Length: 289
Image (tube, rainbow, N blue to C red; front, side, top):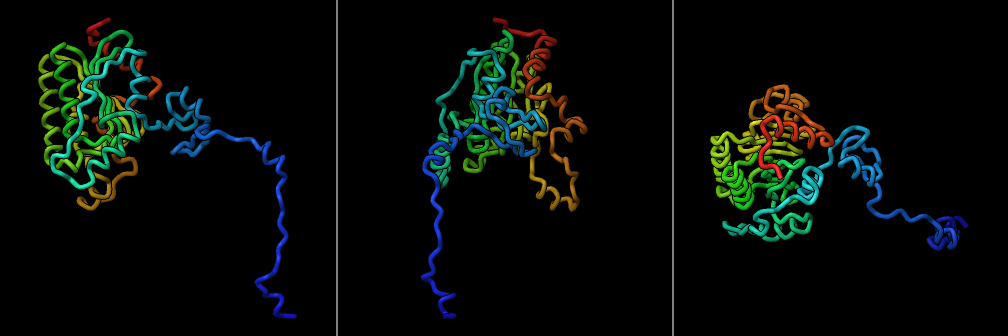
């Protein structure tokens, strides 16, 4: 009958899989492959690690955690961390701030948005601050400012060169004006370091924005950058709405800043350690082991 064609009780054939073939199906371990965020190539993870987290096809530089960068850049097992347990409070009693900090602690092995300490590059002793975008986007709060200030003051006291790796989403809004004050505090410490004739190298990494860009990120004696890093203060949309103009496609990239004289050199990650070592040698080294 016609109504039987539309019956909900109609039965369909089921195809059962071969249990033996399912058991023999290859199991690909999680994390074995990584997709490039730029060219979308699928990269064998061990190849990516061996190339310092740079895509061999398009030269895209993956973001690094602070400790990963320290392990790649400085002499092996020569990094001594300072002020590791300097911890953030909630001075404005900002709702949800403690929960965000707890979440950030789970996403990286950094305890704050920056790791500071003393290390060596081919035996040359340096003070360093390495920011971590995986901890609340590397936002600059009171502890980040304090840790960087202290390591700059140590470099000044011991007359050591300073290397700062920047990556940040800007000032940490949960700390209000206390966060913005860190711009002036770090800058004042850098001025005293400069007055002693000591070398300050800034290395911009993706992304470096907001108050960090407006202060110590652009105060290095020599400013280097990784390729295609985003570097700027306000966002593109904010600027375009303010000046009522369309900005160039490469606006706020490291390459654009190089053309305008804000960056001295763009250096691939695989060449960065050698390049910085040559700069240190040209400036007389300092504090050899």
